[in-house]
Length: 551
Ligand code: ATP
Ligand code: MG
Image 1 (cartoon, rainbow, N blue to C red):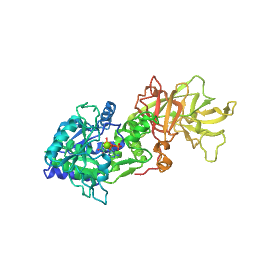
Image 2 (tube, rainbow, N blue to C red):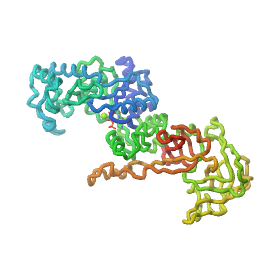
Image 3 (cartoon, rainbow, N blue to C red):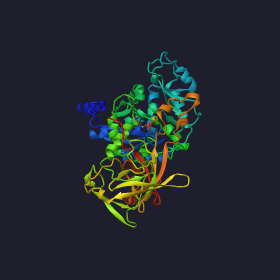
Image 4 (cartoon, rainbow, N blue to C red):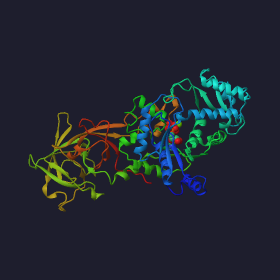
């Protein structure tokens, strides 16, 4: 991680050197209510990465203190994503396992006169809270005796009251300039079955009370979170100290990561998935870890991206092109090069012998010669890209048009002589001739051509589907969100998935889900794990080749 920008690393180093801590312990605490996204990846890289650097430990803790419906699917996907990103937790915990301790700590606060049962409604509590410029008002129930509070809290636990009828509040300071300290609610009643604890509890701790306790129970030394929790830090410290926790974690905030041209909050992602705008949580258009994986992004690229985006305090919206940059950088040396025709146009090479197939030599990756060589078939019938032909081209068009000669990558020069059309006037075939003298690799210098096209031999070509992606939601469109009752769903780009059907080289028959390739001129592609079934090949474009992006 960047030496200077990482203030968290400096704090940890100091804490080890001063002897405050013997070991660094961090945690990644997702709420299992959705899949992880690239923002979580930042938190994972920071938490696991920093602990690793200091030889410390990191817990994966499911923050399940909210009695939401169990979703094992989310728990499983989170574990899979963390591991895929390249990290291994030292312990796996569920915050709901600490409910007993949390209850005891709440009782301790009552006994110390630092918590009380309040009968005000949620709305009244809000009204009494005051504003940034005005102090809050004390609840009429604030001065209940310890005995009365103990009794009422016990009866809350036993289920004697309905949801919302009573809450437990910390007794801090209704006039505090920090609104979070104006007697925050720390327990509420919810008659809901919890996925882990079943019906054992009908009162549940609030996040601001539960989270510091969870950290302290686990002996976390540095509790890293995003900056929206900065104002909660005094409360965090208040809870740890007044609950007399043995270990004192320190909360440190860093800036949230956001990407351009997408939505990031789990709530919105969930809506897109549940309302069928996308093909599941792992749709390649989503910024979820599983979506990026299916799109062909690599853990290495995501890690490098997160590190480059930095750990500063600032809230950063990072250009998605920066992420794409790191994907290209990582795949450059890893992905085999091959040719694919996305929108095929048949070409007959009229002077090439019928029934003959020759095998040409090509490097698997010219930028990484160690990957070796491959063989490409060539014959009388090939496919080229429809977009590489124009009957009436503009000036400076160097691809195929009647009378023009081009180079076929790894093969020969061909010249277009005749254009065959169907009854509707669509071009369906080109008749060309090739020049055997011009074979690639023989050092031919007789004449030059300006265009080099990719192609695939027709008789052995493997059919494939190609999925090209555009942003699902564009920032410029989202500016109108909220106007005329529009929500972000009104701005979903209906043309964000483009499907083409074409061909790849025969050696691709062996391609497996998640294999990655660079298709000459088209970009990097990943074999889709969901749709490549029963011998069908579906490729997701990870990223195109060129970009104007500069780091
Ligand atoms: P969202 O707001 O997207 O629904 P969340 O914060 O509710 O996410 P949690 O499951 O509570 O999701 O997050 C687990 C951890 O990941 C937290 O420590 C949180 O601070 C961190 N995190 C979440 N989103 C981001 C982000 N965009 N950038 C950096 N860290 C993030
Ligand atoms: Mg959250």
